[in-house]
Length: 80
Image: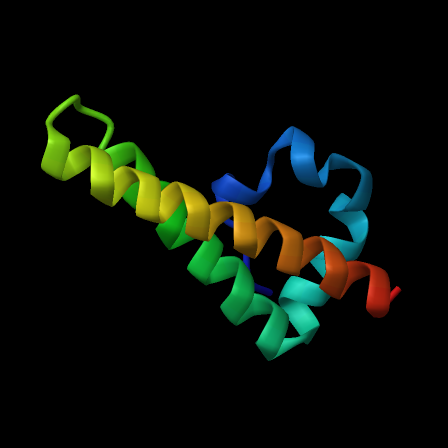
């Protein structure tokens, strides 16, 4: 059984955590979306310093993370 990545343990997904665990284990497409979200949030943290180059990268990954959060939530709602 696959473990749920730590990045998915957050307030945004708290109401759906049971569904997320089940989908993450059973649904490969959902797992790919979640893994992309986890990678994006990790990249956001990596580029948190204040240089302009890193700021643009951080914003790119923050925006991607937000889009993936929405996709995760919509996916859960469609597959409940």
